[in-house]
Amino acid sequence: MSNSYSYDLRQKVIKAIELDGMKKSEASQVFGISRNTIHLWLKRKAETGDFRPREYRPPGHSHKIQDIDGFREFVLKNSDKTQEQMAALWPDDISARTISRWLKKLGFVRRKHLWVLKKR
Image (tube, rainbow, N blue to C red):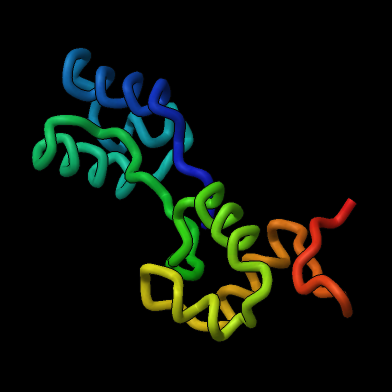
């Protein structure tokens, strides 16, 4: 996805159109943006009262483990359990694969004698 135009530029364009009486097509040439973009900004201002860009959330998994510090304590407390057992003990409904991914993200590794160790 491309970056959105800055709020400062949006303010200048809207001010030029509303206060200075500049036409949309003229403003699009002066500021180097699409006339449709200006139309969408004015439409958003009419609907919401402001023309700020929408917040962008990158696509990805819905992260089921929100509390990272709590998960770290949970792992240290239940280090003798398998990933399946840890998934069953976790308060939310998660899979053993999710446990595995988060263990890797936090730097925990499996060893022969101790199930979970922190990487050094």
